[in-house]
Image (cartoon, rainbow, N blue to C red; front, side):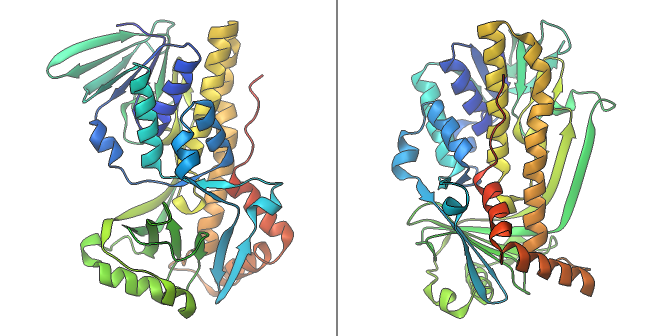
Length: 394
């Protein structure tokens, strides 16, 4: 087989890149080790920045999102018993975010790829990358006992933190930056109406809580828990009881409880590798960076990477501008680090850290009072929450 771009990984970033390239007349093949049902079964983020929404529209996969997604022009914070509304739309010149689940984004992209008769190979194993420093890289894989080879011009590693793409880059080339947080998020998904029309980020002495949503009838809630906790120890009843303890009484009284559709504990970490490119291999999304979910930046940073790589490859194939290839990593990383900073900031602002001394707690409180008590502080939060603008590739 031969194509222009091999994309490893059929998550939202790989499928979005493939869809954009296809619409630009750039041939590509997507390889995925899991089945389509497994990919669609992943429960992930649901807050889309304006830039991500615009990119999905450019990819032509926006109809259901525009019909079913929920546009949010604000977000709420809760601390010291006070509810503080941050008017995103007002503070950012009209920008908003969209509540639309990653599963829905993935499904829309899968359907678009099928309609376009673009090639996606699911259930592959033993994926290997060769000659990525040359102008003739290729990828091999196995499926149902048969080996295949794809010759290509470029490879996009969209295969996540544990994927093969980053692993083929020599260790002395990559520099890793990491912070592991001393707690996790216990998440529960339920077919219950959200407790509030806007998301609520809550700081409480018992730990952080987030009241989120996927639709007007499906809610997603999170609790900060120790990393030593086991999800099996958290019954639905225990979860709802603890959530109510971390919310004001009036808000807790409005909470509609129900059976969990999904429940899991996710550890929190910040992780970045530099560079995000090696020869003709480009790392995209979780293959290059992980953020704690507090700032809702994981999927959005992956879409940011896709935006830059797509526009660079358009320059290469439509204008012959191969000089743009070298700007991918520095350009992507500038936005990645800003997203990492915001996620780190939100995590430090709202969580209870074991081992904090009295000074640290006072500084944390002062940050909350400043950022949520002044227009300048709230504008900083709002600008980052709706998403910083993409740099132009020119």
